Amino acid sequence: MSQQRNATEVIVAGAGAVGLTAALVLARGGVRVTVLEAGDALATESRASTFHPPSLEMLDDLGVLDALMARGIVSTGFQYRDRQTGPIADLDLGILAEDTRFPFRVQCEQSKLTPILLEALQALPQVTVRFGQRVVQATTTDTSASVTTEVGDTFTADWVIGADGSNSQVRQSAGFTFEGMTYPERFLVASTTEDLESILPGIAAVNYVFDPSEWLVVLRTPEHWRVLFPTDQDTADEVEIDPTRIQVRLAGVADLGRDWEVLHTTLYRVHQRVADTFRKGRLVLMGDAAHINNPLGGMGMNSGVHDAVIEARALLALLDGNGHLDDLDAACEGRRQVALSYVKTITHDNWERLRQTDPDAQRAYHDELRALAADRERMRAHLLNTSMINSLRSGRPVAVLGGAGA
Ligand SMILES: Cc1cc2nc3c(=O)[nH]c(=O)nc-3n(C[C@H](O)[C@H](O)[C@H](O)COP(=O)(O)OP(=O)(O)OC[C@H]3O[C@@H](n4cnc5c(N)ncnc54)[C@H](O)[C@@H]3O)c2cc1C
Image 1 (tube, rainbow, N blue to C red):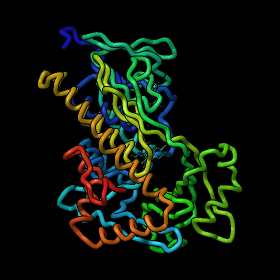
Image 2 (cartoon, rainbow, N blue to C red):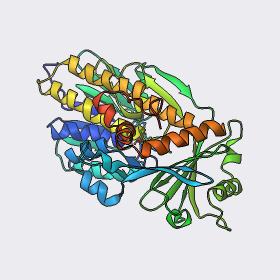
Image 3 (cartoon, helix red, strand yellow):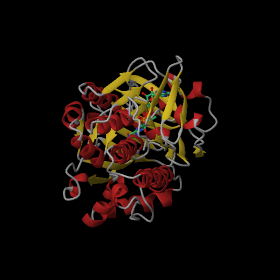
């Protein structure tokens, strides 16, 4: 620990859900925090939309859950569906009542959480949030860390947190590696104002839809529905986002006899990558800056929020003189192992199972899901994985469906 403390104790690069959560944990503990955000305002892009029970507990502890729930919808379960025949199995998160204070998911875009966190931070005098400050370089010594921003400003603090997303400049400029793979197919998300509850009766707020020719994920957010499709590996982006093609694909979800109302579409590449370490000197990584995964299971932002709380608490203890560097390292390495052994395993299994094209293998898996839904103990074991509760208990998913399981 430096004897001479900097005026800012912690710099957080990135005002996403993860950076703002970490900043709030630290600032509530009395730490002087400066948040540097590249954008001129908070990002409004609609990405993550599912909050799992452990994230709800953490946000509740930070006093921001009521505001989030007022903007989101509660989803008490989720559904596995066959595209042709409808529901296969409905899983009830209520079964986790003894495992969590919040045995449900909240469906709400991450862009609704960030303003809530920002408002909480701006109420604290020891917090400074600077927009239009894109970090381009991060350096560390034994006792402090500095960042330089695109506009030429340099900021120094006792610690720097890199929460600047998947293209993290903190990570790249400081030479952390980010090994992993990129999926061959891209994912296409179409948001629609169509009322899918009346179009597909019995549909849940979160649905994993199997089909030998084209799997789907169908999700509800407070104002819209989203349909996520995989794309062909070799088709040009322009072809995939062509509105006529999107209408054909949506007609395959439900033929309305007319075009679907589409609000917007996003096509994106999906990766599984994890940094070689989450701490180097006085630089700490978390969220997408530290690990990225495919979105099947809704674990990216959630695990990032868990990183933020766990790593920031360890840093807070260190700054308060109540913790040791070893504890921070244990927290960082624990989160890295969750990214490698839990999030990566489950999200990749989800992808493998959804894209299964062999009808016999699909039928066998559907039978397994039906059996699971009929057996309370197995369903609970499965939901402890998918709700991420096990990621905070053992750090590993428990095999339930002949694998970590969707
Ligand atoms: C289509 C889609 C759907 C998804 N659905 C889910 C889901 O349902 N559940 C889930 O848990 N996850 C989901 N994810 C993943 C989730 O969006 C990310 O894991 C999450 O956004 C990570 O948060 P973050 O704060 O680490 O990074 P970001 O949200 O990327 O925030 C980083 C912030 O840093 C800023 N920034 C970037 N570079 C710099 C810089 N150099 N200097 C300063 N600031 C910088 C950015 O402007 C941004 O404000 C989804 C992702 C996608 C693409």
